[in-house]
Length: 111
Image (cartoon, rainbow, N blue to C red; front, side, top):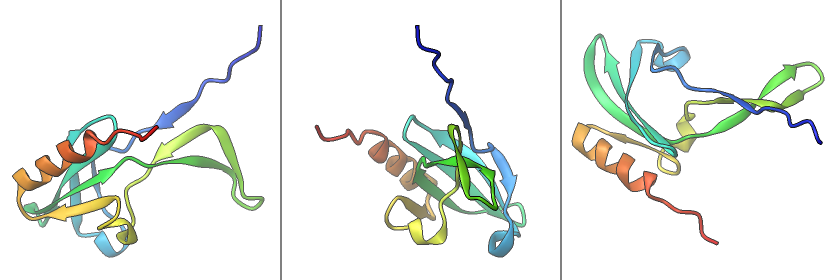
C-alpha cells in the first residue's frame, strides 16, 4: 500500500490589517464559497468598499534562497492589484459584491 502525503492549505485570515500601500485599511471576510471570498474593506473603521475574488493557492516556500516550494503545503493569497478586473472585483455596494460572489461561485469547469 502506498503512503499518501496529506495536502495542507493555510486559509486566509477572516480579519486583518493591510500592509504596504493598503496599510491604513482593515479587511473583514463577510462571505465565502468553495471558489471565492468577499471582504469588507474599511478605512479608519468606516466601510469603504467591498472586494470579491476567486481563491488562489500558492505553494509554501521552504527554501527562499534555492527557490524550493512544498508539494504538500499551500497557502491562500489575497489578490494583487493587477488581478482586479480579471479574478478580483471591487464594489462600493455591499449587495452588488454579494451578487458577484454568488455569480463566480457558480462557475463550473468546462469538460
